[in-house]
Image (tube, rainbow, N blue to C red; front, side, top):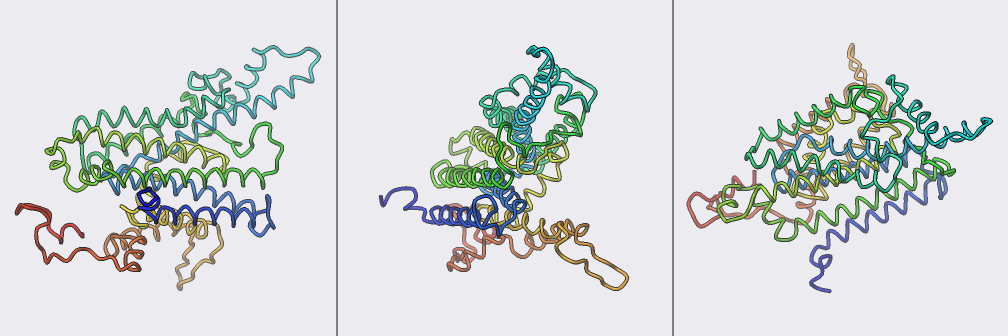
Length: 409
């Protein structure tokens, strides 16, 4: 028991316990099964926040621990939403079409049902035929598999091409951003097979479920909390072992790790693919709570926001990523939801709905300059943790080793 993973990492147990208490508290206070102090819309906001925390954990793995600043992980997040959204929209439309055609004098044929479903879904883009990408839309099991397989396969192919060419640093960040932009532009086209700019809508309605939204929102909230807990546990297990030591070494000095005989590209590819799959799962839980997914959700700015969340929370700390995502998400909802009055400064009136992105950008700059450890760094101060005082000595056996001042900046 003393050598168990949880015993060696009590912070993981503390996080899971807090998450469980939070989930229980929201459930009791919700309109679905509790006393109704928390509205259904806010339960959805909290559920979406948990999904954003999950993708922030994935971002911290790839950036905070492996040192790869990916500006494309929201593409995987959006793809996860599209994969589950296809089944939700297909099944909901099928039930409506079958109910409508059943009122006719003759029972409809299978082909008539399929044609009617296609007309209902793709009529908005002037089509009625099912594209190839919808081949498995009628199967929940296959579409759930696609939630992981499609983002994972895209990350595997992109990562293999990028890492084998040893693209690093800002050039790799630009490539990931270009991938995201290319995917978004493709999805904006009506012939992409995913309804172009209209996206997939009505995802909040579970096909065949008669439960009210107050109950459905709570189901998704529970699923989001479970996914975050499992994702956090997986990430903590990864970074605590030899694999985590290697990817931290890649972050700090990639050339030295390669000279030690490790296949740097394989480790990078493994982390990149794994975090893409986690992002896909987070997106598959997020967009049914949002009710709609469209190409605008995959725009490069979303991935930049993700990096800001992790930086504000404190990269290189899994709990810091969760704190940063939760903090920014909830504060953003507060500022943009019209709950804070406008600020009048003489002739200038600050409308927080418009100024929120400026406040977020300034926060990122201030954190980068004055608190590089982010909000998570406050826990280090509380626990009395300080960087080693080596008085500028080398941190290795040779004169070219990383110095203490460099290691703490």
